[in-house]
Image (cartoon, rainbow, N blue to C red; front, side, top):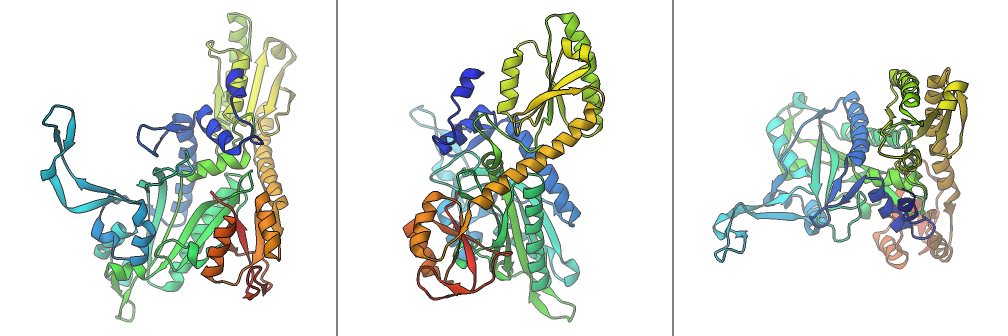
Length: 493
């Protein structure tokens, strides 16, 4: 195991390679035979399952229900909303035929030219069009509203440059799609779901986020407003970690979804959509992990506590196991996930390194001498601190320790973000500071022309107009024209 750990590139040497190494060596995911797609391995999927479970509970607490819609979308549907098709056209994978046949020369199989589809189908890059074509059948009256649906699904966007979890051709996500009788209800829904995402990011992922609204140029294709949470990774880059969109009546008009309101008048439905994806896995890794491996917040760790015995013979192991299993049962009674690793196919040092690499928050070690002294060794993954504790009451101690680790991981990430967030007033200073990474708050004149110029010249984008930002007006750092308020710039994934 020590050899494998030496192969984990240091963050300071090559952050990108460190990330790639860690995803693979911690058994989270690997490349698949299909270009740009990934295999999510059991340990990685266990983390995603915890994310799913928590978010799904939150969605249901806010009145949403799960449904499922088709993977394939008629090509004509995508073209009904002009901005939407323009936004996704370059990323669409298309199904043109429905059958293969043996090649005449016996070399394999080929597409049967006689099995061409009458209308080509798009593998969903997102589901607004197929869902709104369905909602048309569900909605006639205001009594049918609101519709609050979510689906857990996969989507495909034909990315040219891919990275495991961060940007893959196929990825897993959830997408909420809601229908409302009024503009005010839809706007409130979009903002409410952004708060759900922010709560999840900060209280479960231990990842501080900036909440705000996207500029017009950065909006979701077909939206009137896109709300976002932006997180800072340890290399100073931003990662968009969740978005919620106020779609207005654009998709309702595109698919002629109308309803009779309380005044017996016909109107178009108001819509939202919102989603997070397996990109959150990338955010989790890059927000907290170190040169030794993953650092997982306890609220999302598949294994929160691992217990490892140190023994010389079967008699010692039997005595240690009796005590270790009792401790494990006590921890499980408190809702803590525990693994007692008494397998004899790996030495203790190998196990220590492996669980450290995989980010298990707390490690407990029991040896024969520990039994005699009624003590247990405790190590916390976030700081790598370890020491001996009395076995009596260890369950309460560990439960409190896990919460302390959760708080400490968040505090460390927030401290890093705050120390790497600055305010600048001149474009020259902006171009200098953006090379150092981090978030920059600066004035912008509100035009797409200036926004695109900044992006072209510095590779920095407007991540959002923060909800809690400084509302003081000023002058654009580029043009000197009036600026309503500072916006958040960064280079991003």
